[in-house]
Amino acid sequence: MPHDTPLISTIVGGLVLAFIFGAFAHRLRMPPLVGYLIAGVLVGPHTPGYVADQSLAPELAEIGVILLMFGVGLHFSLKDLLSVRGIALPGAIAQIAFATLLGWGLGAVMGWPTGGSLVFGLALSVASTVVLLKALQERRLVETERGRIAVGWLIVEDLTMVLALVLIPAAASIGGGGHAPVEPLSAGLNHLFGLDLGIGAIIAMTLVKVALFVALMLVFGRKLIPWTMHRIAHAGSRELFRLGVLAIALGVAFGAAKLFGVSLALGAFFAGMVLAESELSHRAAQESLPLRDAFAVLFFVSVGMLFDPNILIDRPLPILATVFIIVIGKSVAAFLLVLAFKKPLGTALTISASLGQIGEFSFILAALGVELGLLPQEGRDLVLAGAIISIVLNPLLFFLCDRMRPLLEGPRREETAADPASAADAGTAQEQAAPEDDDVHPTALTGHAILIGYGRVGRIVGQNLKSSGTPFLVIEDSDKRIGELKAQGVEAFMGNAVARETLDLANLSTARSLAIAIPNAFEACRIAEQARSVNPSILIVARAHSDAEVDELKQYGADTVIMGEREIALGMVDRLAQVHHESVSYEDRQEPATIIPTGTASPERE
Image (cartoon, rainbow, N blue to C red; front, side):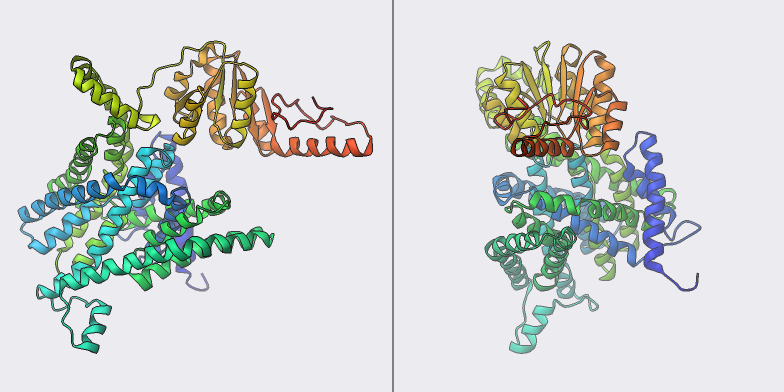
């Protein structure tokens, strides 16, 4: 090459290999992130061949964390965060303390100093932001009660780690670590006023800075950020709007880290959360989605680059103990804590599976411990190995929790039936539980319609089905909409319709029609394919946004596909024809619209 381009080569090498191995992993019915991790190992310094830039990859991955947390904030309101504070705050702190104690015990057994063992335990106690959110998003749980608890739990963990990153250098300096850095604000006050600030004052200052950032975001950010985005939207430039979304996400995250000592991920989360109060939040989420996905892939590649496969051979027993603490110790602790707060079993299993891995904060803590001379190099290697293995095992942990739920619920039901007092308590708990955690039984409907999705399109379809007296049920992944449907007396199931077990609840084999109202064409194709295989005679109606999606949906079994843009155009033609007294030509219509919004059709079309 005529000149060195480490940034380009790192991005190209990481994404290309991640695509190749991610596709192989998907082909083998494994999560694509397993392929991303393998790609990172291959471009890392511990394997032969091409080696990506070791300093650029983690910084690129950090952008992915920022954008991902910004996207979560867009779907997570302040009300949601406060609604789970009663369990997220004490639960996260107790789980961190338990995992840290286990890590400290392992470090003590291996002969490490107390400070290093505590840093090691802290590194094992905090879950990965990217892995947790990816798992919840794939299962469409972010907007459910258990998803909100998991995200709130994660926010408390992040806040705790922000505090730890300030306290560890201070504790190292107090403990006699001569090369430990001094906190800048403490050094400035010492110089100006001759103050000798102890660890208590440093904790207080850290809490004040975090509280000041949160207050500024909630008081001024809630007005300034939505106002800015509305002004940009009114300018009419999609490119400028997309740039504004990225500028707010990255700018607020960077400013929060530099001015207030808050983590980049936490700063981005609050930026998204205040923007969520704007009507433009949905559009902002769509515009930032491609970059979020691309940089999230680079995060997993960067993790793989740090991993030395030789440690699996050199230190198998310490690795097994580390993985046990992360996957089993943390998960069991979280499971018991959630049950202690009288939450449903399904919620406890979801939270425990979500937290059974470690990630980006763990790497930062381990690197800081090594830099300060507290943690031996072996400790960082164990953290990296534990992270890789736990991330790979996390999908399996979710699978096992799903399979364990019926087994665990069986004895609980029997105990409830035998004990009237327990039955009363269980009834109260069920009333307080989220819709997705209620006992779910297949529908008794036959000859009915199945509606997938209850968003803007699905709502109109559902209203027409209800007004016409057609028996139908809804499959939806938002607990708010499920609650709304049940309040209207409409049968509804919580979950992702792509999952075969969810479709089975809808008695697909005896249904007469299936309306797929979700905008995701990939998922719609999988749903249509499964429905056609179960019930060859069922009528399948779907929606699309392009001619290519229309053809694909028909290929996978859809009978009728409505393309929104074509229907909008024909509606405009109808209205123009009324004014100009012209007959309407339907030559461009490939198929008749089977569902018309209530009260919006013109007399001619009725």
